[in-house]
Length: 351
Ligand SMILES: *Cc1c(COP(=O)(O)O)cnc(C)c1O
Picture 1: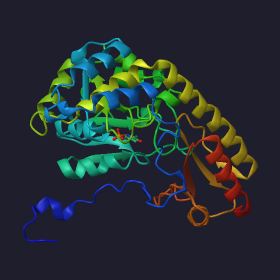
Picture 2: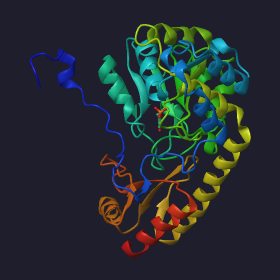
Picture 3: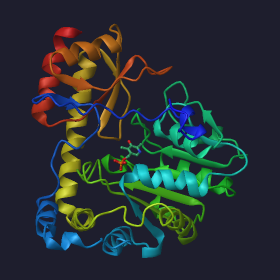
Picture 4: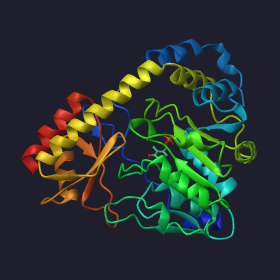
């Protein structure tokens, strides 16, 4: 605390990211990184980009990357926004589109960055409870609101909403922006980007951190009506003209071009998720149906915090949230086959 702080800083309760340990050889299943590296073509693009040209500022509009994304999703380039991780894209969305009278709505159990942005940008919010199966029920979202945001699949549950459920919401909720945070959509869901031309209040965000194995590079995107994108561009250009460096732009382009590598690695993660789910069920866990690159599981007899500690002592880290309703669950990121086996080998004697 300091007298020099702006008043709002005293009240901020920042987001706490999952641990990035300095110790080698841990089985790291705590932050939903992709267990497989990025496409070799992405790495090659980065190598080629390392030159004395780095003395120049990058393209402030990241045009090449926007074009690659526009091609991939069959939208116009002016319907695409990119930023330094989808976290930054989300921050600009909260700033540019959610500061209205009334309350922003999001699930009671969801990505814990949303309330942090609300605090930073002084946005009122209401949490809408998940049902008893920890699923989002969009019919429960009141029509009086200053905006709606939810991840699909939801985090940290992994539960997926069908596109038809999202479309029903959009049909009745036409007076505020609806944001679908698709950080994990490539692991088994259907993107709502196919709906953006029908619903001018729909904005879809994605990230290259999970399904495209580039968490370190910090690349996120939003797709929606050009007027929503323009609002984001105005905020971005009032904040940082160059959120993406040229290496990230080039790497991002290749990540969208190399479909083969992307599809193969996503399928491997999906197959491992299925296998790991069965193994956990055999060990006495209840496992929520996941469409993401992690699973959310609760043991019938053993305390989740104790299990997380026991795993940690033997070099395996998973995520445990000390939040109401979910404090008996562990969130386990899908690892390589070897990591998944090591995790089970350490877990087995604990339960
Ligand atoms: C990981 C994640 C993000 C942030 O991704 P970055 O692009 O790495 O900033 C956003 N939303 C959800 C739900 C996530 O899980």
